[in-house]
Amino acid sequence: MDVKFDFCSKFLLAIVLCGLAACDQQAEQRTVDLTVPVTVQSVETGTIESIVTATGTLRPVREAQITTEIRGNLYWSKGSNNRLLAKGAEVRRGQTIARLDSDEWVVGARVEARKLAVETAKRTLKEQETLFSRQLATEMDVESARRAWADAEANYQDALIKIDKTRLLAPIQGVLSELADITQGTLVTPNTAIAKIMDYTQVFVDLKIPNAQIINVKLGQSIRVSNYALPEEVFEGEIVEMDPAIDPVTRTVQVVGMVDNPDLLLRAGMFVKTEIVTESRQNVVLITRNLVLRRRNQKVVFVEEEGRAQQREVETGLEDRDRVEIVVGLEPGEQLITSNYETLRPRTRVRVTGDRR
Image 1 (tube, rainbow, N blue to C red):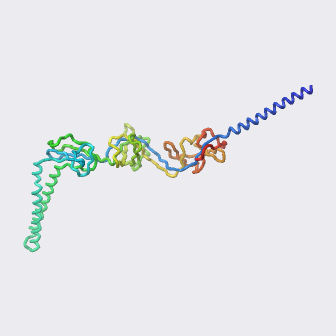
Image 2 (image 1 turned 180 degrees about the horizontal axis):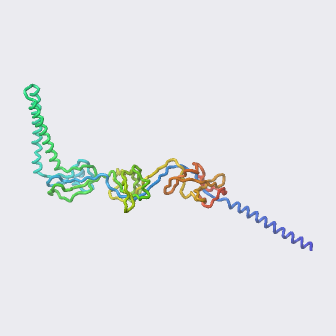
Image 3 (image 1 turned 45 degrees about the vertical axis):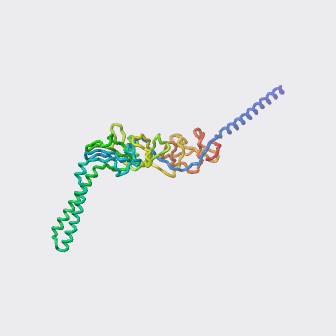
């Protein structure tokens, strides 16, 4: 009986010891499993912008219509390639676009005769002034000669203006955007529109900004314009005009930007994406947006310190598509945890894998 009891006791003791050993192994295993592998990166500073995005349509900053003032037969001029000007041709300010052959108008102007009259009147005035200095003419004679010279000069200038009406000049530098379908030598009447010139070295972009966003948009703010057909090009400008009232139908505000277009890559009528920079901050702490978690109505991130995850409550500022400004809670150079952070708790043991960035 004693032998049997002694055997049972030893057997039970062995089972208990094995159980305790197994528990120790499991506890040790659990301790190892609580170390979470993470990646980290050094907190850095940079520049962030608050952006309002809108789509808009381009139009030229300047346009000019060329219209006839007199009756005559129209003849188109030639361009630098020695061919008749055509739609799309670049023209300079003062370049002759067409001329009107109007014998009646030219005869009526009598330019040469009026020029001769000016020269004659000027000589007469000098003669009278010389005679007056010798007391051989009266002051009235001199004044009469001066009026005659002034009248002759006015008539001559009027004649030049009339002759100028036979030449149709480009009032601005730009591109011929419209050209009337008129064949050489066709008789045209006054007020005939023959061409339109478009200067789009700068372009306006017409935007409609929703009511909810207009509060952040102001005159003078920077804009960036891009078009899907020019994926590598970004054109910069600023807001130059804002409608003071909200459209009661669309609940939007008409806003106009102006953009430099020196290489004429942008064209009137283009549909473009526009970014309005409503605010910009430099040298601020920036991190990826999705690294900010919400815990008990607080915004938090995790940093690695001496092998443990430390929870930091943060205050955020400006945001863009990918990043967020950290106003309070992080300092440059700290090791921000960038993986497996969703399940971390304060002071969780962590093991940094990969390179520290």
